[in-house]
Length: 143
Image (spheres, rainbow, N blue to C red):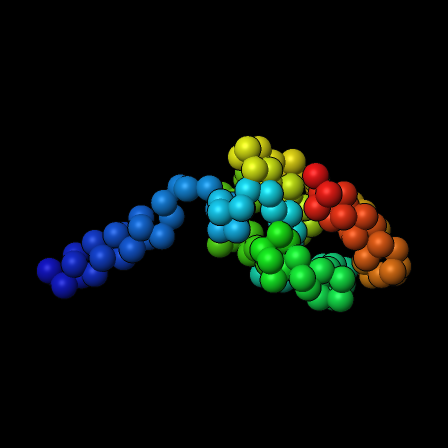
């Protein structure tokens, strides 16, 4: 019985330490200030369109934004909704979503939810999807 209580206390302690409640803003954003973050939220099971959104987002970022990613000006995060509920709540996301966030040097941020656009285009018009996402990223990188 004593071992069980110690184990429970240890588990609770580890859980409390891992969820400090701090903003999960990218480290680069904290250091440099101005960062664009591409957040792909998903659940455990994904449909073909959800898979396409992730695939083509990663393809675009690798092909056109390698330097910005290396310089931490652009960050991609693959976010499991069940594991990062606080982040999903912050951006009012309840299911698979694509959100692009402009983190500014003054600590403010401008999120743009591209979910509808992504679901309309990622699977059937991947080039249109990539072009639209690139326009949004480029606009935010200029700020």
